[in-house]
Each structure stands twice: as C-alpha cells, then as structure tokens.
Length: 323
Image (spheres, rainbow, N blue to C red):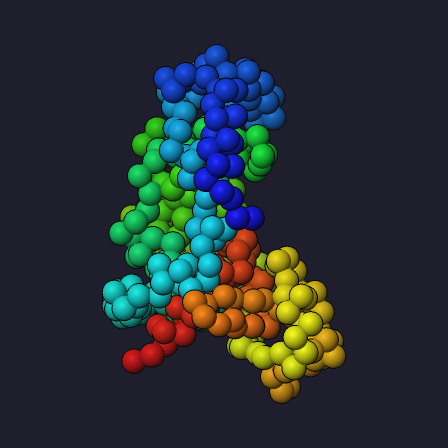
C-alpha cells in the first residue's frame, strides 16, 4: 500500500508514544512476557535471555524504514532500475563463474537454475556487498516490541534466540537488514532454522561468510517451496479486452487457469492452457506491461511477498543467462 509522508510520520509518532527509551527494553511491557514465554515454551536459559535482550536497543530508523519499503512506494520502472543494472549483472556473471562447481552440484541436487539462485543473492545483497548494518537483535526487538502491525517480528525475535542458541552464534554480533534478514541470501531467523544448509559439512550453517552454504541454502529454500524444474516463470501478455486490466491481481495467489484468463480478455501464450496463473500489471514511465505468472513465479514470492520483487529476480536471471 502506498503511504504518504504524513501517514508515515504519524505512524512513527504513534510508535514512539508506546515505546521505551532507546537504551534498552527491560522496562517495556512486552519484555517480561517474552522472557516467560521463551523459558516455558523453549526451556531457554533465563539469565542468558535477560543478558542479551537487555542490550537490545530501539532504533527509530528501523521503524521509519519498515513503513516505506521500495516494493510498496516505487512504481515498477523505478524499482527495476535499482537492481537491473550493468554493474550488478557483471558481478552476477562473475559470481556464476567463480562458484561454478558449487552451482553445478547444487543445481543437479535441487533442480533450481543457477541463474535464479545467483539472481536472488544479487538482488538481496549485491553478492555480499550490502548485507545490512543493523544488529539483528536491535532490528527484531524494535519491530517485535514496537511495530504492532505485524506479529511476525515478535515470532522472528523468538526464532532468533533459538537460532543463536542452537547454532552457537553470538546474538549481539550478527548484523543484517532493518527487517532482521541476514547473510548473503538475507534469511530471516525462521528461514535459517528451516532451510539453511551446511553445504561443505564443516558443522556450521554459515550464510554470512561461506558462499557455498549460502548458494545451497537458497536452492533448498526454493525446492522446499515447490520449484518446478524446467517450467516457466512468467510470460508477457497483452489484453484484447481492456476490462481485464481491472483483474490484474494485487494478490500473489494463482487465481485462474491460463485458459480462463483467455476468456477474461488476455492474449495468452500457446500451450499453457492448464497452468494456474495470476495476471500482474507493471507500470512503466509512459506505458503499461501485463504478465501472466505461473507456479515458479509464486515460489519466488515466498522469498519476498512482492510481484515486483519476483519480476526483478526473473528478469535478472534472464540477464545472467546472456553471454
């Protein structure tokens, strides 16, 4: 949803009024319940919990950033230009060459194209150049305690404590994005717990410094969400009935079959009739594009719930296929 500066400022002001000092969270009304839940539900060491969480700091910039993510405030042509750059494409092709042996093995094991994996890592962190500068404990405490719109972050704060305990990680040292995403592939804690892979067998799932682990983890993530090897992602289409524009989806669900989209006014690709699909509209500076998206497009949106994100990854993967 688009937000005006006034609404964003009002949200930040509201959040500020219910928050505690930036020093720590020990006096926050959610602090003691969180401690109690972690001890009861996960047998967490209470002293360790208090020691770590008492050092978490509320970050105003995080609350400001979460209110205006690029996927929701930029039109497609501006969002696209952030990622589909010559510099990023050059880095992506070099990344594919440098880690060819790993991509060969991972692509064979999981059935996810190397260009998709490389596109994800390229879009997320520019191949490790931009992994985030916030302490994850600060990001998730700020959002979990002071961003009431989404309980997701409260759960992710819990998952973060489980992640660091069960993998012998330093909770105060790990850095990531303003939303608590970490490493080359920007996994949130629940994703790390469920999908991180120890590719080289060294006993660590290191998504920060071990590129092989990161590549394998992204591939495994996609496989677990149902990536269909050899199947298309999306197709550009046109409309023969302008009313079909009203059906362009804001939902990421695959809402009808391709043949049904044909009846609704879309000039569809041949040979795709039985596939489930969604219609998306992308606004350029002086024109509009329409795309039919299939199951693999939906899988990409499990990584980031945005049709613009999925389109950027798909387009970038095509660029990486070029010599």
